[in-house]
Image 1: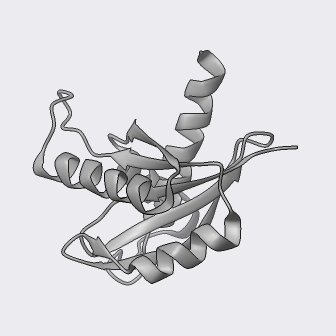
Image 2 (image 1 turned 60 degrees about the vertical axis):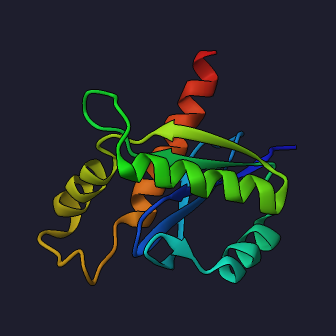
Image 3 (image 1 turned 90 degrees about the vertical axis):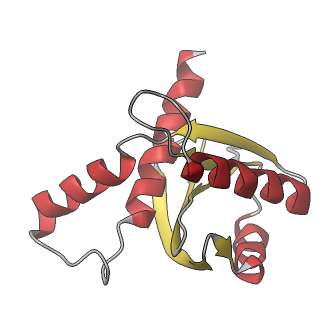
Length: 140
């Protein structure tokens, strides 16, 4: 039976969320979760975790292009630690460099120009991060 995984694309205003399983290895975009200065609505996260019952969680790690950590990297790691502590699930931090850029490029290709303040690509970015993690698992 396939295992389910949830992925979060950490953000200070909004967090993208995707779900997928290790059989199909594709992400499905879920509704983004609002945040205030990087602090999510934990009740919403609990509801998503209770609904999907994931085996493990994946969190995008926003590294600088040279691979070094930034303030956002540290905040994403803290978010990952809090997820692990609250839900007692394994959390995998995944390099997400250019995931938002790739999600926006895909969106432009299919839909043309969009105001990303109103139309989030956070869920699409979470899908890309999750699929990247699935691919990494195949390589090991």
